[in-house]
Length: 118
Image (cartoon, rainbow, N blue to C red; front, side, top):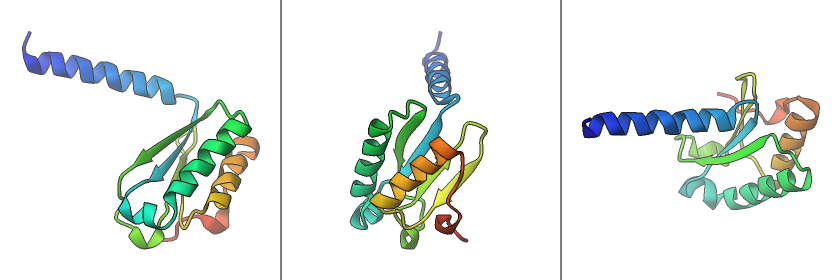
């Protein structure tokens, strides 16, 4: 077995594990880079963690990602619903983050006025 075969097998197993972890869950993915941190992403991340813990939302996974290239819109938060629907929010504050999570988890609704407009 070659190194590439081993690598491919390990990668496939890892991707399968990630897919299983995400299946049926709401994913909150916060852009987390220098530009987003400079305008409050640390507070947004903390707020997301707190609201998920306080609300005991076992179906929410919080993830961070790098720069999306939209520095003027940061902090940006993507919400991926279990059905594959994606909602992208711009200028997210700690307070907005709490509202967004509660709206999606408890009411299965998005917040139109905060969605990213391109």
